Image 1 (cartoon, rainbow, N blue to C red):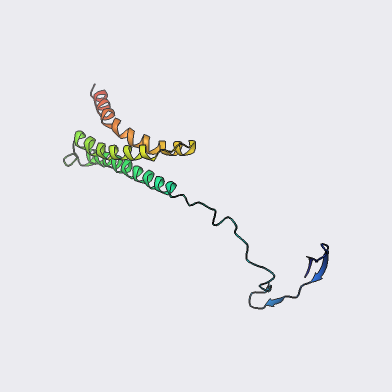
Image 2 (cartoon, rainbow, N blue to C red; image 1 turned 30 degrees about the vertical axis):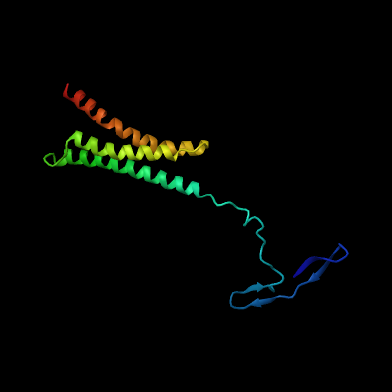
Length: 148
């Protein structure tokens, strides 16, 4: 194997490199001095930012509350459709989902950061939890329109 090696005078000389072959893997193995580990000069200067992780956890918690609120509505819809005798009332489900929505919305508000991409990212739990506040009104409107 040929390579260019710098000399003390600043030029380069072509020299041959002796290497052995690992017969088990059929790969050339170079001496350790020939391939030193790569330096990582910025490793100590890198600042670990735990705020992003905390905000991501609050985003996940907010989405979990929204999912539990929407889950309660869909379970109520399923029970009203197939088992109307056991289905809870609309007001009960509205209060139950509203509690989840209130906690989820409050957490989503504290998740907001001043970066545009994070604002877009935070709009998902904000709208998911805010829409839970409108579902009881929507259900009553749909019931009234179907009755007439």
